[in-house]
Amino acid sequence: MSDCVFCKIRDGQIPSTKVYEDERTLCIMDINPLNAGHCLVLTKTHAATIYDAEPADLHAAMATAKRVATAQRTALKPDGLNILQANGPAAFQSVPHFHLHLIPRWTNDGKGFDWKLVPGDRDRIAKAGEQIRAALAGGTS
Image (cartoon, rainbow, N blue to C red; front, side):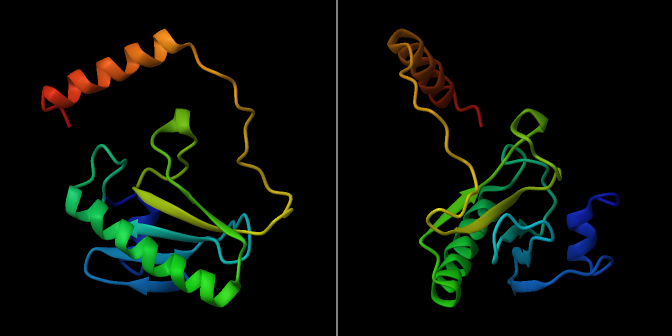
């Protein structure tokens, strides 16, 4: 896609700090890191969201995420790791190209991602589960 910043990075039109690359994926350092070591795993094939991505590319992205996360743990010794992936504006996706954020976390690092646990309505939970099961049985992907 000609106007996609991640496609331009993939094609070498925009500089990046590459960490890892294979046939299907590319891992770069995030230029707006939440914490030190914050990386992005991109699929090389352009797909705006998880809904558009090919399963083989998603499998490859997760394999790369594990490989890089293991290296982050060895190199940086974080206390934890967030893997974040967003789809669409309502989910705060800032670049419409499938990617995973690998964010090293340290205890009391002052960063967010926590939310207050509020029990859900059991009937609504069950109904949503039924709708999802029906969609799965119908073969929608």
